[in-house]
Length: 331
Image (cartoon, one colour):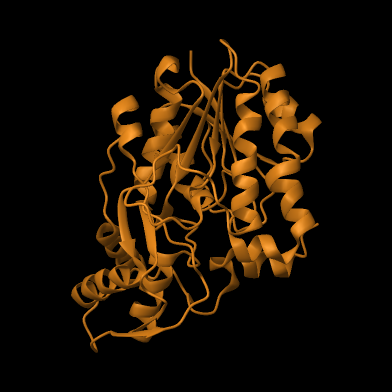
């Protein structure tokens, strides 16, 4: 029997890679999304898109009927976007979360995968931050991401498998590319301005290619329940300083799109987030090994720029979550 997968926020940056991948793998896919952002998902006989709000618990519960696994990606997804309207962001990222979990379980969903964030660790000078490291969130976005985790595990049972992942910052090309994420921002500037502005530079950031992110979600759908039940997993690949990311971007862009040498300009930053995550646990438990590097992400973005797939990338609002939400006047 074909498994049915519900992806909240499935029309977002990651969803635009993940949903087609799951469809190609033979799953039925239900995307549950408010469609704040441009939807470029192609029609498919096994794809259903419901334009709806995760805060509408009754509607969400009905959508979960017949669903095997919920992949919960939907959220107001970065600090600037969260700060636009804190009450709105809290209602989407936190208040509705436990009612969603209860509704999914009641509807017969067998597995619930929650996408938290590695940013819940805030600042840490530990050489390797593992899953048992204290959560020291610096922002409300980080705080509410972390607060949802125990709410999920309250409801796990033998017939309701619950797992949380804390992914690193995702990078790379998607049919719905975000250019407000560190690697993607620097690549955009390198390609179009031949200049990269680095704020701070010494802060460490864990990174994960968008294809590895999609592969991990597919793995979590099929992983034996005894390996993931009640678990929290870091999911990252390369831990790099912002300055080292900039140097990698410079090298790849100069190779892929030759032209004037790319300048790196460093200035001060008030963004203190710095942490170095350890992802050994997920490798040992379910065999997840990332395959794609930051350099691969930059190379893919360069190909997309060269093919004309990212038009007006320096100005168009659609590449920035905070600009889209400002224009939509979301409530």
